[in-house]
Image (cartoon, helix red, strand yellow):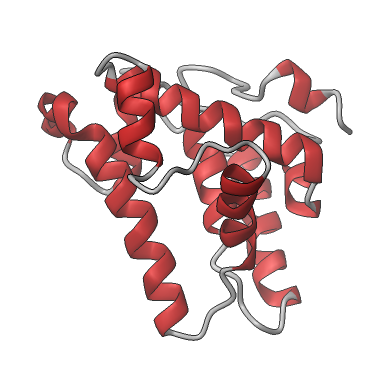
Length: 170
């Protein structure tokens, strides 16, 4: 692990130690995934590399991943406030969480294109984070965030995957 990654993971570890009611930081985890290429989504959820053949199931996989982690946190009595706040905002402010679920609405909005659906969810996530500016978001964007995707030499595909509007908040 290089020093940049070590610093990012140290920030995450410090946050875990600072919060007495441990918050799994699902929103933080989703944010870091959102900065990578959407076609590699499954890799960040522990799926094998050849799972990219599951292009037509990516939205279901993402929805299941979010729902599963959120529910596991609730059952373990772990604070899910941040992710709940995001979905309440999506529903109440943006009117983007209809009764059939965000994934069905976005799938229809994007004419069945899974990568566009993922991009739409990530754009709302980024809008929410820029609006709320949680401490972890500001801290993460103070320094470059290298891609977790590696080339053949083992170095990150990109040295910094932060978005320019996220860099500007610090």
